[in-house]
Amino acid sequence: MSRTIVMIHGMWGSGAYWDNYRRFFEARGYRCLTPTLRYHDVPPHMPPHPELGTTSVLQYADDLQAEIEALDEPPILMGHSMGGLIAQILGARGLAQGLVLLTPASPAGIVAIRYSVIKSFRSGLLRWGFWRKPYRQTFDEAQYAMLHLLPPAEQRARYLEFGFESGRAAFEIGFWPFDARRATRVRSRDVRVPALVVAGQEDRITPASVVRKVARKYGAEYVEFPHHAHWVVGEPGWEEIAEACAG
Image: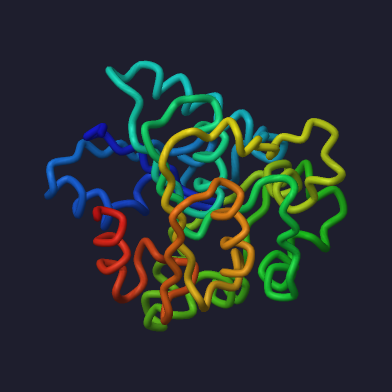
């Protein structure tokens, strides 16, 4: 098995939010790469890159494919949230030795709409033309959707690290029946490597009921953690999830 892990972050984030997992796996002898997705290197307090709003999930995947193909061997792909969906896309391209999908966004064909998901994205969805504009959650949305298990002071600090996200990518993930390009389509037969899928029982933005369907799609090993939600990269007790992935 590869000793290189490429860690793919999710919406509004950057490679820096993998610091806990990077240190954990480096201490176990892995080489960990934590790339930042296209246009996500703009400081959170600055205006977003003007082309971010129309950037596709497939462009994120293409950028990472170029980095992966420069490696000596296919790596393990570890993706969180939207990064988990990108890992599925790359896995279907034959670019991985294994997949670790942490509270992953679901591909086309899996209906993920739930009340809690709509509430998590409400401010963006109410903007006409959101599918071509940069978008950032409000603090209340991020707190509800992802950060509610963190101590209150840490919730605010973590939110201040979040940047903008592509409206196009959000549309491709959430409204895949209307996406003519089917950007998030992944054929299960093309994913031919072992996969581990992790869900949190208290996840509101990628509910466990949806994540189970992702696991079933690939015949993957599935682990569901009580007392965890979406921010499995930094919630109290994140180490137990990292240990499960290492195992």
